[in-house]
Length: 265
Length: 252
Image (cartoon, each protein chain N blue to C red):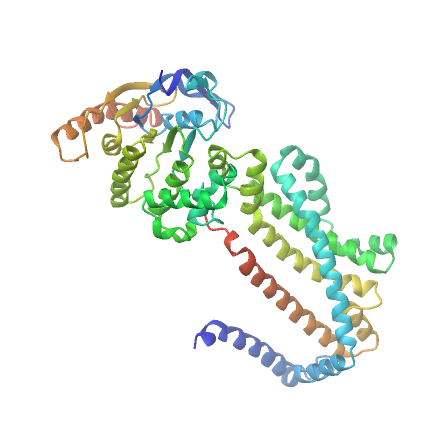
């Protein structure tokens, strides 16, 4: 049985003008335990909607989402979330206190939770920054806090919504490599949302490309069979890149025509 | 050197204020109705020595602080409820939106009719001057909490009550403190006006009596003390925020 399965899911929103539109429709997806699944698509294709529904922040308008065979009814610590921006961090808590948050809510004793939080700060490479406040840390470090905060809670799955999109290219590459190491070390399952093909091919064991929105669903799923550390100059890496690029390219074009119907062809 | 760089501006600012005042009073206006700082300070020392100044300052401050604390204790939970529960907001909005446009100063007449000229009417007025500012700022603070802060807590397994205590409340602290600072200013304005109109003591009463007997120096002593008190209390307030709530300043 798959860890997560979406069956014929639809999510309809109402615009401010009172018009209904579907972000995703007939959306099907299965993710197995231990997978690193990247969901890829042009902007506005509903990738984030998929993540929000699985996280339990928003309910699907139709269809069902199962986690471990049980329908998702709301947020739970089964599914740790890493958000794109840093506005989910608690500015009045230090790095280690942010990481401890979930354990504190579960009333894990103070010394125990401090020990575990420090362990995970170490895992994400922030051992020396435990007593700093988020405002004192760089964008990359803040994303590491988010990652440690989610992981220390031992979720069955990690949901990441373009977590590195706001970082500079160098930091992003480092974070990707470390995330992959952490994933290998912890064996957790990941749903990773991105619009960056290079990022998806670098990280995923499997990746899914979505159609241009609205009423989007999965267009194609690719198994990324690259062993060991991924090398961006490797021929097989580039072959995957080209293949995915081709799929995305068409959808970006469709999205562009929809947004600018009179634009150049 | 560091002290000069950090505080030198204040010293120059205050010195120039008194210098300008002196120049204006001695050379420009030259009127018995506008005493120079020297004679005002001399008079202040005399009033301080005979105890009247201390007594008046003490009673005014006591009124401000009691009302301010009571108004804040009342306003914070109301603001939290309004910000957290939209139905509560809709029910209470008419009260806050209606009453906040009636200044506390305008309520003095009603306060005196209802509660007489004793301490009760002052307490009522200061609470009235405090509560709406604190309510509005607190409610605005709750409403502006980043949604992802709440969502992150949900995904970390926090209950609704835990989210309120550990996310909504601390995230709102800076707004509450801002509201309280504004309320402090309101309280000053209100207490002077209330004491001018109806009181047996206090700085406002001192102002009124001095006008009655044309003791111009006394009027200026009261004004000087009001300005200084406000300045000092605001500094202390800011210092307390820095000491106890520095970590709650809006950073992320």
